[in-house]
Amino acid sequence: MHNHTTARIVIIEDDETIRESYAYLISHNSPHQVISTYPSFDRAKQKIQKDMPDVIILDIRLPGTSGTDALPQLRKLLPSAYIIMLTVFENEEVILEALANGASGYFTKNTPSSRVIAAIDEVLNGGGPMSPEVSRKVIRSMQKNSDSPLTRRETQILDLVAKGKDRNRISEELFINVETVKTHIKHIYTKLNVNSRADAITVARKQKLI
Amino acid sequence: MHNHTTARIVIIEDDETIRESYAYLISHNSPHQVISTYPSFDRAKQKIQKDMPDVIILDIRLPGTSGTDALPQLRKLLPSAYIIMLTVFENEEVILEALANGASGYFTKNTPSSRVIAAIDEVLNGGGPMSPEVSRKVIRSMQKNSDSPLTRRETQILDLVAKGKDRNRISEELFINVETVKTHIKHIYTKLNVNSRADAITVARKQKLI
DNA sequence: CCCAATATCCCCTTCAAAGGGTTATTTTTA
DNA sequence: TAAAAATAACCCTTTGAAGGGGATATTGGG
Image (tube, rainbow over all chains, first blue to last red):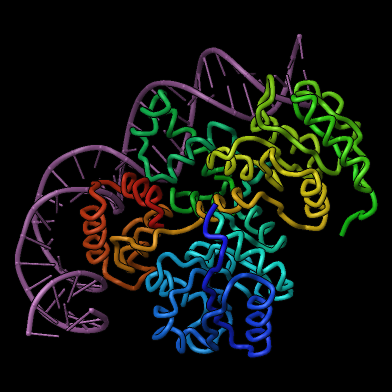
């Protein structure tokens, strides 16, 4: 689909062994070239634009600016580069934040270099490569609670409440009376044990009801 | 984690050729057994509980009840079964809806049976297997817009607005004056070209600003 | 140095929000 | 099939949040 020949790779990783071994393996076992490697983002940020990388392999636990904080800055410096996270963190929040901030792939550090090389090809070809445990966490984060205490109608109304709609707009959209909307909202509050829209939204999000 | 030896597989797929060829290949090239195959969910729903499948391979375009609508019902009938979607649809909404409704994996139909067999092992071992294009779409759906017109503070406030918080609670949480919150919200409205919380949230979500 | 971001305060009007009820269908399910 | 949910609609009340209009001061980064 894309340029299958040679991509320019940059590795940002503080552990020298890991950094150099990935660099070596990518250089020797793939058509791609490792242009530069850096031990931190702070060391990389002045020079990385000149490297013109197509793919950046980025660690999360870095000295100085963390990989998480480096992500948005890298995206700004090199908007067209793909960024693959390579980290020991399997913490769901860390993973989701990295992806929200523009990472195109996410691997744990036990990943064999052959998989990382395949991941480079994948991002270049429109894929979103991830470790199995990572993609499971991503999927889980998207999954709605299948046994909600709310009825379909209540869920539908709570959805609109979470969009900030007021009772009048909800009643218009659902072709029901405003008073009916109020009743449903009251029932939602009772079931979720809250007494305001804000808390209903927060509880519902936490329980993945919406 | 689970039984690694032999999983019980059920295939729900209307195209007989695809259905039988996957059934044959899984039975002969993996340790798993295909217990039953069905041409539709409507035909499956009476009998599938007796099949006690560990993994269900589910098509989306099915006669009668669609795969999308079948998902929540399957989850209710067989809460512990993993469901892998196998479909021609690469439409982002369809993918996201399937995952939200409890699918554990998602593949397009050009996927070789070897990959599907690997995916069965992956779901059984806590993975979330997906086609590369599918996982790219999943990742894209999670990504925030990196060039937002909003300032950090405005984004932060809009985030709280989207949680349904009122001005007083926002001012308390951020340790700033209520009037300051009002000013920020006014600026947000101007920038997003809206004049209500509801519209601000809707526009912001559409543009992935929050 | 200047502009954008952030922060603070004042005015105003309107009506949405939440709490308290009751009653009547329809649909689900036990 | 009868009981139990779910859905729908109505009434009354109080409070203050929401949105529109302004003015002004401080701060921080390019």
